[in-house]
Image (cartoon, rainbow, N blue to C red; front, side, top):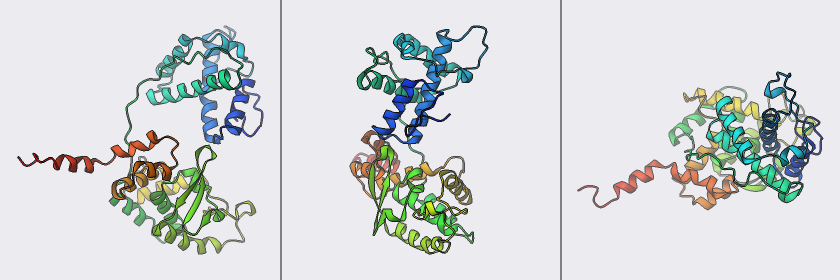
Length: 332
């Protein structure tokens, strides 16, 4: 299902959802990935409500996925109660095997919609989600490579493969700069100025990445190879840093395959480590070995809320171990 992105009306959705997604895109600057996730969450809610409230003919034995919601109006939302919302959350657990994290994300999507409808669009007077609680979720420790595993991964990219120098540059940037997958794929040559790189992160927010020696060395080793095929690169991708084997800007799926391949070549778990886990690794290594304070790490990673960055303060067991050993009674 296509969502109403960049002003393209989606006739599979109610008009109030199309208006909301236009607001997220144009005013809030949300990424397409965010809007697609909201589309899935809110479409599921509306389909459930149509079934739960008996708004489909009883003789229609429809699966939830097949229920049409384009005909829904705000009148349906005006009758929504807190109990209806908890029925939906119960359905998520019982019939869709959603855990607390998935439930919490959907609740956040629902709350965001109703906040828009009541405080921005002002087409509803009552927000039924005000007292809607999210399930308690424990803090998750980030999954990351150790320093030695990171070195093994970098070593694994060095081979006779024709793309090895490009792949080495990609892995080096992930491990040194803490880039998101989308940020790496979107890097342009014109974004680079000496030892800095400008990237557009979540919410279309621009931030500056500072390139260390390893990153610069890897990029400048790759550039001559990239430029050997400059005439073959697609016209619209001439400015792209990383080019695929088909001479276009490298895409997310290709980068995911590259990471998975070299993770396996390094003897690591291919199913455990992804490009996002390499971002976690970069942040953890900076925090553990670089004495980077949490505020600086927040800026480097482009986190809007410092609470997101604080997961890395729990990642360094060695600091905790040394703290306990420093107790003057430890040898008694």
